[in-house]
Image (cartoon, rainbow, N blue to C red; front, top):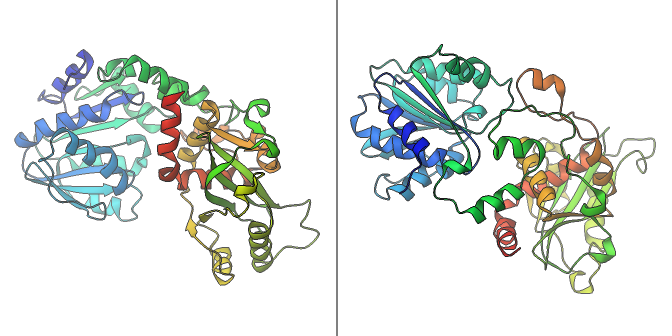
Length: 423
């Protein structure tokens, strides 16, 4: 496997006895994770005795981002493992698998004396957990290796660690910044394709590898003249993945249908809303909202082509916090009820990617989405605390669309990838 000069330099750094913590940050597809896994596999046979751990956002992401990569590099390195397990055998050593989202994660770390760890997506770890991890590596020769994409310049990892490394205040730490140019395994054609997928904030973070603030409009690429398609001009649909539902009592309720066109593009084809324009003076009960939504789904024509007349969403994807509404939908015999994947930042990034790359389109029936998109903005107060959060106002149709898009990604992603590669 070919490696670049910077990758080789970082690999050597982990083997230096004076380096305790190796941090690899920078652009996506820059080879950070592959390098981390290669270095980890080389280091494990000589690692001191003691507990070992791999930490990520969830055990599922650890499986996808780390363990699957290790299997690719060395198919025999890993013993039997499922994403539900909290241990895996790598090169004969037992390794704890810890998801930062697990409520018991910090307590589990607190009980370990670690000889080594690998951290995937380090900026997603809460600061108390990260500090706890640092304190558990007390065995002589213990080492930590972490990968991350850039985040806010006010993020604790940047201000309390990376900045201090660069000032020479943490001599037993090393940080290396990567871009796609540091990954010799990528073709120029592929790099150009990835660059086209991002704009604005996401381009600067994920392509240029910069730690920059989330400021201004969330969807700064939004342009109704290119993103909005008249409903009558929608293509014939080949699949209807879901209706994403954002539930409200005092706030609006919104539901948007996500479908795949025969041209290999995704469409938010139709929208249902209960808001100030049609709610009246009273609050709708869960039963009233459920009945109105299901009636809309069953009776309204959502696509213009006659052959799509009987097409309905595979799933009804609901805000996971809307417990009472889900119960009512079940009682009303709703089909395909699914809790939404509510990873807000990932969903925003996915939506922004679709809009920027023009594989996600919005029907002019989705008036709530069209009205909300231009004013959807980052919260400047959250930025001061080092976190990315949108301002929670006028985002109901946007949230419903995000639920549908993120939760069904594994269903539509292969088609979108084929579309992108043929453009």
